[in-house]
Image (cartoon, rainbow, N blue to C red; front, top):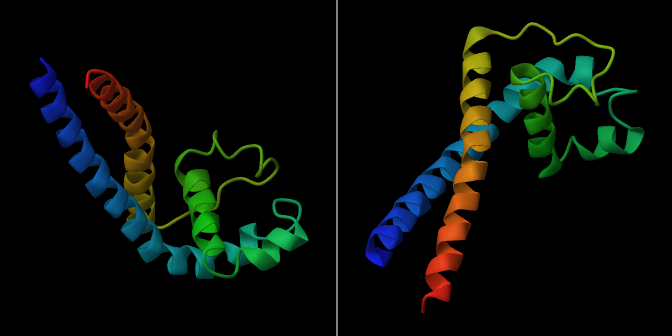
Length: 127
């Protein structure tokens, strides 16, 4: 039984590794486009404080700003606290599909990571 759990844990490890690579590579590839296209609309008060407006223009925080934008475009109910009064702007098809894929893989990875940690802790306690 422990061998099956170990094999499952190693499979989860590789799935999480490749999903993490996909999420980071996708976020880095789309950050320039979303920044150029939507900073003048979304990166202003009251949605972002003046300090955030300055900080989110430089690495590595512009990646966080991109994740905020992708969350707002794909799952607006998650980002409704930050963007209360503004409807989501129209986004082209390719960035929308890429944003959905990145955010969905990232959100699916969270329960997989928790499952991986539970199995790893269980197997470690068996040693």
